[in-house]
Amino acid sequence: MSGLPSILVVDDDQQNREMLAEALSQVGFEVDMACDGAEALSKANEVMYDAVLSDIRMTPLSGLDLLDFLRKTMPEMPIVLLTAFGSVDTAIQAMKQGAYNYITKPVNLEELVLTMTRAVEYRRLIEDNRTLPRTFSERPRTASLIGQSKKLVEVFKLVGRVSRSRAAVLIQGESGTGKELIARAIHDNSLRATHRFVAVNCSAIPDSLLESELFGHIKGSFTGAHILRRGLLEEASGGTFFLDEVGDLSSVGQAKLLRVLQEGEIRRIGSNESVQVDVRVIAASRRNLADLIEAGRFREDLLYRLNTVNIFIPPLRERPEDIPLLAEFFLARYGDEKEVPVTSFSPAAMRALTGYAWPGNVRELEHVVERAVALASHTILALDDLPSEILRKDGGISNHTHLLPGTLKALQRDQVLRMLESAHGNKERTARLLGISRRTLYRLLDRYDVGKTHASPEADAADPNGS
Ligand SMILES: Nc1ncnc2c1ncn2[C@@H]1O[C@H](COP(=O)(O)OP(=O)(O)OP(=O)(O)O)[C@@H](O)[C@H]1O
Ligand SMILES: [Mg+2]
Figure 1: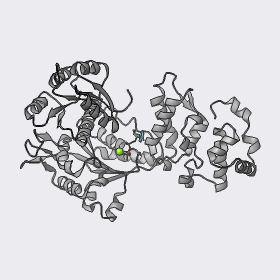
Figure 2 (figure 1 turned 120 degrees about the horizontal axis):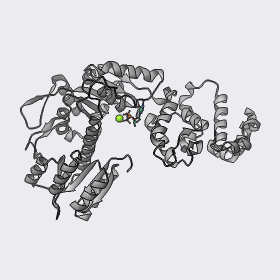
Figure 3 (figure 1 turned 120 degrees about the vertical axis):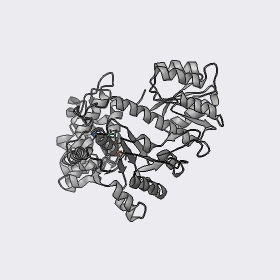
Figure 4 (figure 1 turned 45 degrees about the vertical axis):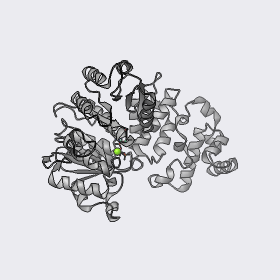
């Protein structure tokens, strides 16, 4: 199976089954289907799914039977059951028997996706917890945080310093810079590491669900609230509560969150009693919160609460020294999975990676390496294995020219050379890569005096990897 979260959908009604599978795969789950309990069991024995979604009413093996069986053999597998609207008793029975959650029919797709996402996260949390250090003398789990640039090392130091405190931390940085990874590192190195790290993506929860997600609800508090459910804040108690994309929180959501942070307690919907919650709050935002405040879209008082310590993760283009390190790290991660392992980058490929501006930051780099590894047919990754945007005529360079010494002329010359190299000296291809005519290319080669020294086809023949 791929790295996508996987779900087994079990329903004897084919139409239903396919509708559910379709809805889930559309949002990025890898979905497998089974048409009854027996098939579900045999599939679950073969493949490690992240979660199971099953209808209750099936013959001969009902959803509850399936639940029973899976609870015994795979206690950590979250199982979500589908119950007919109004069959409260079965729903309660399902929860008692250890179902992770249930969804009533007719299925609300938003609820379905949210529930399954949480089920999968829950599963991953359990797995993470098993690998947690039991004592703090053990090595902290920051091994997968890669970087040696001055800027990132400063971030790592800050992580170490704030880990042991309870201070609220605000992590800011562009998309894909590693905000969540840093948040987890803080948690893993804190005294709270044996408790949960609960992540909530504020942009994913609509206002209407926010309160019941965060605070939970008691039985009967609203239509559909058939049982008591603890909210995410309560689930995080003792641990860390990670508010991702906090800048996307609506003004209503901001007000509610502020109240919790001020009072340190919550009230489940429908309840008069307050529950103390002891959470360490880490928030992250890809958008600049100061700008949002200026635009009147974020509360200043909330920012003060969140921002005891501020961590800014610089974009990858501002710390190009980290690129080779990260690239090697991802190559090691994905390269080993191949039958013929991919073990290194050609120098030209590495140059292209380091010269690119990475608008999607580390996540983009990871994807590029993963994809290149998947497509590569040699043990060395060459320029040809990289996607075209990395080799595009500006090579992303236009975005970070301030990093490169030299004049525009030098930049242009460098770029022409790079493309020439990637095209193995083939001028027509080079011109196409650069988006210029062949005649313009010849003019440039002439001007920079590179035609004779750099474009020799013999050099290419000696180095099939394009380096
Ligand atoms: N310094 C790093 N070392 C190793 N892996 C990293 C590093 N920074 C980021 N990554 C990896 O890059 C990917 C993106 O990181 P993460 O999800 O933490 O970013 P993010 O800032 O939360 O992004 P977004 O704003 O898009 O949610 C993850 O797979 C993460 O493991
Ligand atoms: Mg994130």
